[in-house]
Image 1: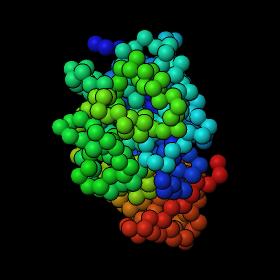
Image 2 (image 1 turned 135 degrees about the vertical axis):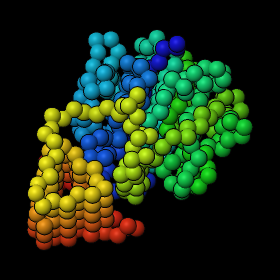
Image 3 (image 1 turned 180 degrees about the vertical axis):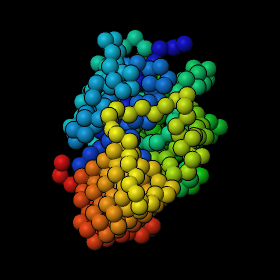
Image 4 (image 1 turned 45 degrees about the vertical axis):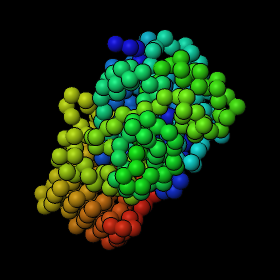
Length: 364
């Protein structure tokens, strides 16, 4: 088996940021109450036996550092290899929809040069999916391609997702944004380490571009092929996609596909007590995290850790993040309430299914 290292990029922004991503990168946005979006990229690599992973940081890295720590929860706290926290370039943010800026890769070339690995798997931290990377690397090695990119047929229009122009499994160009049926890039690809270093030398003068933008004139001589992934995969770039993906987790069939026992999604350990459902509470079709205390009514919703829903309060079709308190008589519906908020008694936070209400994060 060929030796692998991983590289996860988080130094980018979205075209239409929301209150959820103003103070934190997309990578550290909470997901399903107890996870962060970056957990999927790190877990996919850990489950493939990759024991050396670099994480390229954005400027607003505090929450991401706090979450990943030394990498212990992904078996990446090691004497040899492990998790490497890498700097993102100061002017590296791209709003073109691409995530693999040459400037970020160039600044961290030493991470690649010091390795003896044969292959590098690169991933962003903005997609939710659970994938066997060993199958990806096997296909790549057998095909003889220079680069193998992971793709999926787009299910809707998304301006932040990169699309590929593909003919017979080979990439001939890219487009910024996808529409239904387009070949959507899942921001993951595998490449030989030495070839990646060569690419960085080729495009040294164009380091303001994304790697796949820089390749635009060279798809004829660089063999870039697709690997179609047919499992559950959703981008998390805007509030509507974020809300939709979380709500899909209330379907047991979807959660069974995303969280198979043989490839667990790992996250930062929290020693929480179990959720407590007090007498008189009503909870249906919801995901309730540890240390929550429920006295009121919760339906079709996701609650993060240590959320309190007081008697007479109602939470419906909403996401309530960690350490929020919904006071007696308050009503939260079609909303995303970021962490540490207190919704006063008798208050209504109500959006519509087409126009969600977002309450920004309160001060820690």
